[in-house]
Image (cartoon, rainbow, N blue to C red; front, side, top):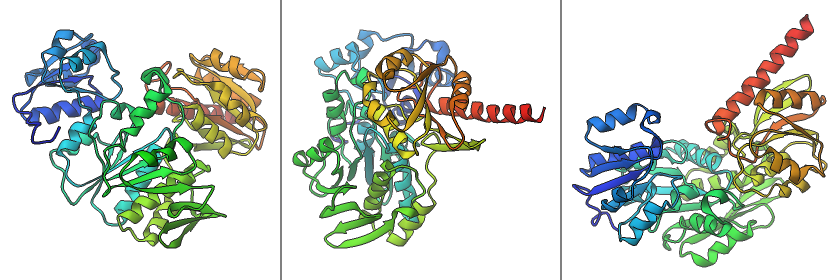
Length: 461
């Protein structure tokens, strides 16, 4: 579907699900003259001030559930990220009603260069670092997508000279058909969101959609060390660049010794690993991808090195909270997958008391066993998945159970020894006990600081 075919004026467009992205879609559609309605499973009492604002504009809000007739009466349906293939959406598709994701709708109207970054882990860090590199290179650049501003917010005002660095999740890609970036990067692939997608194959097919519409004029950046991601090179038309920590590549970035090199026909030293502030080997991948994007857009290497050497990372990603009585506390609340937790464990020295748990996404927690052996000394579990995790790991690690974050932090502190680390890296989502991973991370940090103050006060007494 082209923009010319997508004249939204007076077309009946249904937005499924509100929230930040859904609200942005409604605003855009209204500006385009569409006849907008909303279907939301939450009751009206939970929709906040936007509900009244939309109703005053004449936007029909269907709350407390979805009605099939609402979907079938629409000319176009835009599900918000995270809205699954509802029976009502499937029925609409079968009736010939087009269904577009928010990013595909935005892409039809966007001007300028669009960079899409996806992968199971590392998206936010790579997207932010790439944005900062391009900004340092004096580019007109914007941060968008799953981090920052929904892409649709830029659709009406985008400029051909601007660059939009966009973090893109599988939820955003699930309903895409023709979405295209000029630069697309695939960081890694491991099981995630299986409760939502239904299978690993379905999750892969969603991720793949970022690459299937690339042309020979576009740039695809693929992980050479991830067999699944690397296999994608055979299915795309774009010019592929690779990044690797295990081998040199003829086109891309790679690690040799303790230095990162770039190769685009000529080998060039990029920077030594000691210049990277980010903790963990997985962040070397993120840096290499950002270097390749910066190089593609002509940012001088000296400017890229300066940005990378000063980049501290993002909150809730292996974030050092404090060191108290020789014990260092790390907040890795963003680790909602087993693979992310494995990477966090491998980023710290042996002698870890690990706090895990939350809402399960269909993960196989037995995959943690090799990483835990020899590195994690005690495990503290909380949340809905704690019993499933306990059954998976009880043979390899002593385990304590907690009911609250405060109890988990207290138990971890009791088990830890001077010189060791307490690591919150849940391998689960946060929605059983917290509003999101940021909320979980903030509560963890509050409890760590409270504990340090309490211990300090007790010693004075």
